[in-house]
Length: 248
View 1: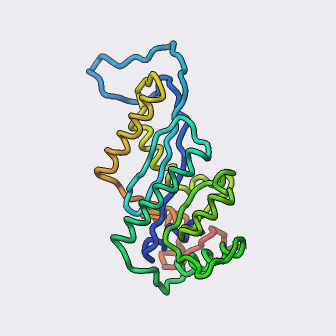
View 2 (view 1 turned 135 degrees about the vertical axis):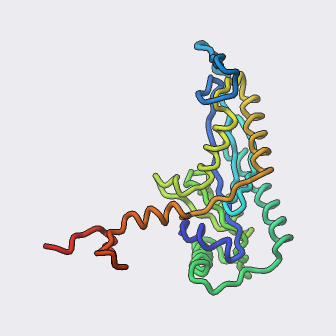
């Protein structure tokens, strides 16, 4: 379902966002390359104090590359849920102002998402009328993300949550953008306190949003890998998908 959403939601007019919490990042020297004069490499101290950690709350839209983020020192539900609700309301209002057309499509992929949306409501009170699908949110299956209050709020605002399975964090593209942002912000640096970490991360997000890069699920590299798996037969257009021998 997550792969279907990546491939068909945006084309159907349904914005798709990914959410994750990056970190914790410690106040220690971080390995990595940095700018320095030739022959004068930057030297990190071998003794340091740990004064706390910081995390980055992240919302990422792969289709545009836009990132909405906030640095914090702790991420209990009391911090994550209010921030997430506020950001999602802003995203919904902005999207519907720019694209007022309601969801209408006959493509099988978005229709499967539409049926999945209505299926969610069987576990909850069925409202009349049922809210239309306005946004898809991909995130992991932490206990706080599964709370009745949070899921109920999402559904009432037309947001379909899609949970990555255990060991399936690679399905969440927010983790991909986080690795890029964190490397740019902390590589080769030695933050002295969590406030510095938060400031550097948020400044990096601002810089990224000035020239964002869209992410594509299953792009050209995947197509090349699929072609490489195929075993061609005598120069013809036929191929063995699973590589099985046709000779006993």
